[in-house]
Image 1 (spheres, one colour):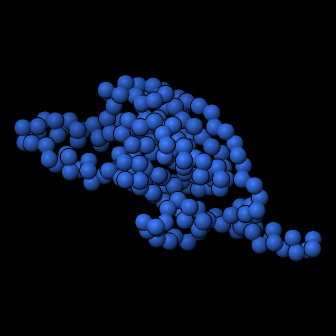
Image 2 (image 1 turned 45 degrees about the vertical axis):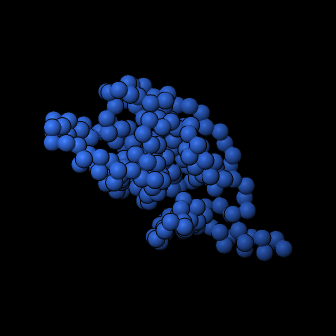
Image 3 (image 1 turned 180 degrees about the vertical axis):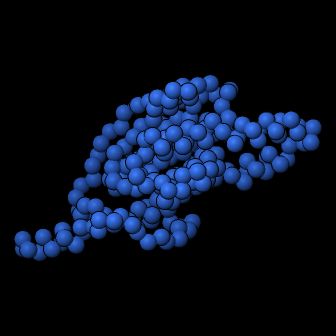
Length: 205
């Protein structure tokens, strides 16, 4: 019996490289399907670590400090990127963190500058500033490879972050991604608002 148990545990021991084969994720598959493709670093029958996250702040010398909550766990980690003026305590953010807890994966949720508990003024916020917020989270808080989950406008910022950090982003999951909506609204501005168009272009770069 003891030998059988050791053999069962040994069957779950992963290779040193965490590489895993890519597979298409259609509408019927999501975060669970992605994480299921990854070799487990512990036997599946071991209980998942149920830990609590506390509010912390990412200090940035020349930019507003960002409020965040980080759940420690295995790789790849998940970064939730909220929608327009959405908070890290929203329903989707909390649901994703709970899902990560159940599987033992790391998770980060945060507030944009000028939103929620983060420093800054929402009236001075731009897409360019929020893009920098997302990159700060990835660069300064996220450990190892990451799966980005972007909701609504966060899906647009998720795409920008993946382009800017290809070495760290291994997968994307969009939740009602608003990339096409943003571009459509921008293109529908009348010619009289050409100055406004230039302003938006400069501040979303």
